[in-house]
Each structure stands twice: as C-alpha cells, then as structure tokens.
Length: 100
Image 1 (cartoon, rainbow, N blue to C red):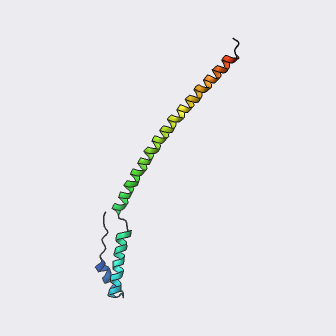
Image 2: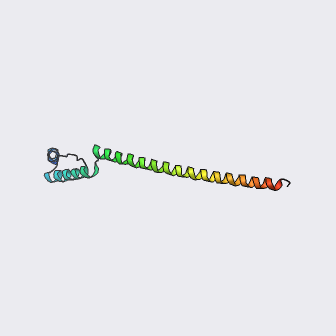
Image 3: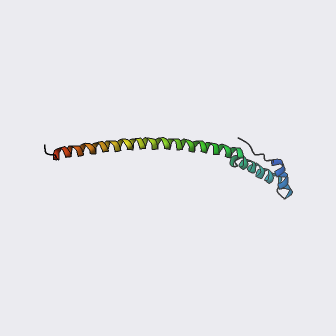
C-alpha cells in the first residue's frame, strides 16, 4: 500500500504562525496525520480496488454464463421430452380412432 507523506513539523509551524499554541498545533497535526493515514486512499489503493472489482465482475459473468448454459440445456431436454410425449399421445389417439 502506498503512503501519503504529511509533514507534521511544517504543519505545526504554520498553525503556530496563525495563532495556535504549541500544544494545540501538535494535537491538531497529530490528528490530521492520523486521519490522512486511516481515511485517504492513494491512486495505488484505487487501482488495486479497480483490479479486484474487475476480477470479481469477470468471475460473476463466467458463473452467470455457465448457469445460463445449464438452464438452456435443461430447457431443451424438457421441450424434447414434452414433444416426444405429445407425439406418443397423438399416435396412440390416431391408432385408437382408426378402424381396424
């Protein structure tokens, strides 16, 4: 993970220059450094997240395609089965209706 550089010493000097006490400036600088480290994402973080999301999306697409193919094959089996049943029933009815 890449890090963001935050110079607390320079920040403290700037705060003191505008009227903060040494203690206030140090506490504020320490809190800013913590927030930056804990909360900000770097370009590297975002690229890593993007890569992971693209990989997960691709895996989901492949899984969905496999399930769709499986469903299509099952539907074909049902249609063929029902078609064979219809042919059998029609043939039986025709044989029954024909004089013989």
